[in-house]
Image 1: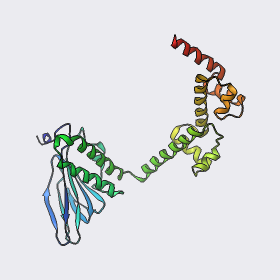
Image 2: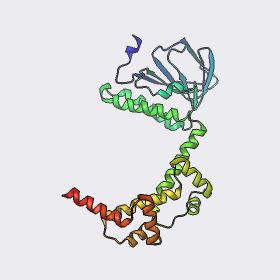
Image 3: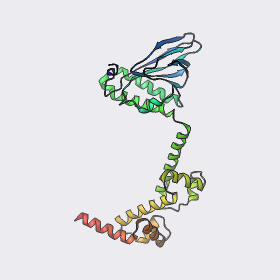
Image 4: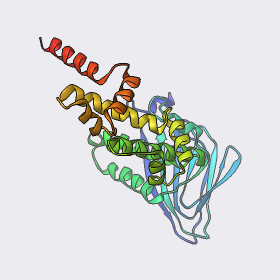
Amino acid sequence: MLTDLCSPPFLSHSIESFLIPVGESHQTPLHQHPATIELVLMLEGAVQCDINDERHTASSATVLVIPSESWHEQVYAASQQQCGYQLTVCLNSDLLPSFIAKWPPVIPIRDIKRLKSLFVHLQHEKEWPQTDSHQIKQQLLGLLFTFINRSTITQNTRNELSLEDLIGKIKNHIEENHSKSLSLEQLANQFQLTKYELARLFKQVTGISPLQYIIWCRIMTAKRLLQTTQLSIALVAKKVGYKSATQFQAAFKKTTGVTPRSYRIHSISSSNIKKS
């Protein structure tokens, strides 16, 4: 069987660089690859490719994707220099990322230098004994596929990823500064948002408000101090950011269902039972 050409648990592949000088044309006649997907990284020039009777043009800084079993032919014109890499990967449904099936025929690459470096490293691995470089080749192929897939992500998805990163930074800031005086206005100014944007976006990602997260961080720290120190309730309250012991005790009981003193007594009792 043709699929037996793959050698589990590894992805079999072939990679070659190409350079076609100005004034020379090159044509690959009609053919198909029954068991491999073909990727052409264009660094300079452009290639015209008919895939299953549909014409596509891949210019510089793009990747041409030719699925397995697709009838195709390629033409490299003589009007400009053409160079890049041709990579064919033997299909193995258990190892190839599922997102490859959703790739369009031509993918513009935002960071072509970084992608080129992956192709270069993969080609250099051909010089090493196969038994010594299998793992590196598989890792490079995985990185290469993932990097190309990044360029297929839509603007909306990129915005979602950026939002998660922003909220992650806000959470980290709260975690490190919850013992200080923090307000919605201060956080909003810190991250160049309005307080309404901050409240809406934070809850959209985390499910709670920024102020609820500040309280949660303070109560978690207070629990730790009550369990591991002999600090007074008033001093614990001050250390976690409350202006008064009364305010702290009210917040603690509302969050945990018990007073700080009861929590400390129960924690010490539980600890003694475990030690005995």
